[in-house]
Amino acid sequence: MRFRFVVCATAVFIWFSCLAPPRLAGQAPSSTAKKKVWTPPRTPDGQPDLQGSWATATLTPVQRPAEFAGKEFLTEQEAAEYQRRTLE
Image 1 (cartoon, rainbow, N blue to C red):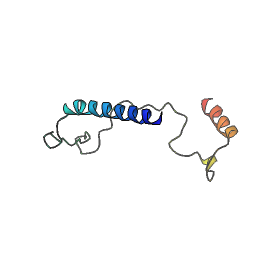
Image 2 (image 1 turned 135 degrees about the vertical axis):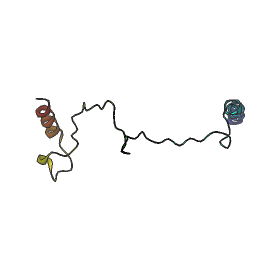
Image 3 (image 1 turned 120 degrees about the vertical axis):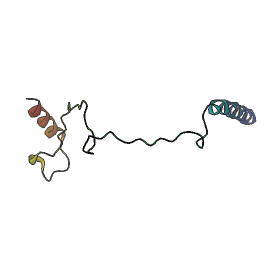
Image 4 (image 1 turned 120 degrees about the horizontal axis):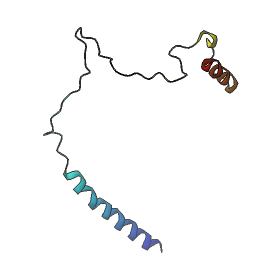
């Protein structure tokens, strides 16, 4: 029974190995591909251009509130209370 499993597993491995080259054949070698380096858009004065839509739909503040200074983690009750106060 073990021999049959090994033979079947080997056959499946060979079958999958034969499928790989046709999928890879359509890709151009990296030596002939044009390598274009992406550069971020800039404003006329050379600063990064940050125009666009920025979503701020989160309760996570950018800076830690002063009331949590020195406290690494909040308990679930503290987090729920902070969320309730923020939503009000």
